[in-house]
Image 1 (cartoon, rainbow, N blue to C red):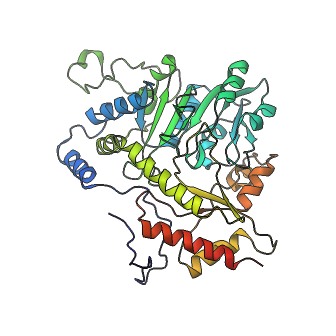
Image 2 (cartoon, rainbow, N blue to C red):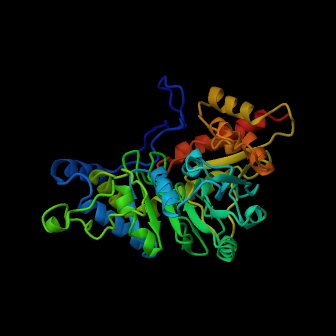
Image 3 (tube, rainbow, N blue to C red):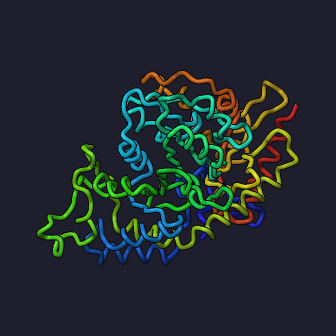
Amino acid sequence: MNKIKLNSQGVLDDGSKFILPWTGRGIDYTDEDIAIVIDVMKNADPLTQGQYLKEFEKAFCDYHSDIPSFAISSGAGGLEISADLIEVESGDEIIIPAHTYVATAIPFARRGAKIVWADVDMETRVLNATTIEPLITSKTKAIIPVHLYGLCVEMEEILSLCKNNNIFIIEDCAQALGSSYKNRKCGTFGDISIYSFHAQKNITTLGEGGMISTRIPELSKKIPGLRHNGHRAFEIMKDYYWKPAMVNVDFDTMGIWPHNYSIGEAQCALGLNLLKRIDDINNRRIKNARYIIDSLSDLHEITFQKTPENATNVYSNLSALYINDSKQITRDNLIQKLSEEYRIQPVVQNHPLYRYPLMKRAGYGDANCPNTDKFFDNMLSLPFYEWYSKNQLDYLIESTRMAIKSLRK
C-alpha cells in the first residue's frame, strides 16, 4: 500500500504542496506488522526487557555472523555506550568522517576527546584508508567508519591500519543495515557496531530504536547493565524476578554510570518481524535506486554515490552531486525548481560537522576536508522509498530530467 497515489499520468492534484514529499516514514508497515504490535500491547508482560527483546537480539545476532547484539532505544544511545566501553577520556583522539550526522560525534565530544575530522572520497562519499591514514597518531583511540547513505565502507585496509596501531573500530551502521563489503555484512568488521531503526531507516521500530553489537566478550557482558541502569535481579530472587538473563550481568559496570537506553517489547516484536524480510526490503530499494540512477546517467550535471565493485549499497537515501556548467546556477536553483514547478521535495543532508554551530562552539571547527566541502555545497538527496510505485519512480525521473535540462545555459 503506497503512501502517495498518482493517476495514470503519474500526477496527483489533491491540493497538497508536494507530489513526492520527503517523508518521515522509511518503510510501509504490513497488516501483519500492525497485528503483531497490537498483540504485544494487549498481552505482553513485561512490556520491556522481555521475551521479544531476547528473540530480536538472537535473530539480529544470527543475521550478523553470531556477533552478540543488544537492542536499545536508538543508534545514538549505542554510540554513547560505545564511548563508555572503550573508556574515552579527555585527550584521546577519535577519527570521524566530517560528512555524517552529528550523533556520530556527540558521545566522543561529550567526553572531551579530540575529534579529528576525516575527509570523504569524492565518488563514494564515505571515508577510506587513504583519507584516514595521515590522521593517525599515537593518541588515536578509535576510528568511526560511517556506512553512509546505505554504502558499506571498504573496510579491509582500515582493519589493517587499526590492527597495526592498536586502534578500536566502531562501525556506524545506522544507515546501512544489510549492506556488505567482500560478502561480509557491515557491522561484522569492527570491535563495536551500532545500528539505527529511526523512522527514516530501512527498517524502523515505530520511529526510534537501535542495536549495539560487539565481538569482544569483555565488552558484551557490560552492555545490558550500561543499557538498563546497572539493573540485575537480586541473586536470591533470580528464579522469580525478571527472568531474562540479567543475573549474569556484571553489576559493576567498570565504574561507569549506566544509562537507560531500554527499548519496549512492541518495538522489539516489530523489529523481529521486519528483520525477517530485510533482504527483500533492501532488494527493492536497490532495484529502484538503480532504475533512477541508470535513467539519469546521460545527464552530466548530476552524479550519484559510486558503489565499489566489492561493496553493496542498500540506499537508505539517494544522494546526488549536482554541478551546473554555469557558476550562476547552483544546487539551490535545482531544489527550488523541483519544489516549485514539479512539487518534489529534495533535501540537503549532513552538514560538515566542523561547520556545524554546535561543534564549532565546542572547539571542533578545524578541518582540512575539501571533498566534504565540495560535496555538501553541491549535494541534494531526492525523496526515495522502497514502497514507491513505478509511476512515482517515473515521475521522479522525468521531473528531475526536465528540471536539469531547463537549467542549462
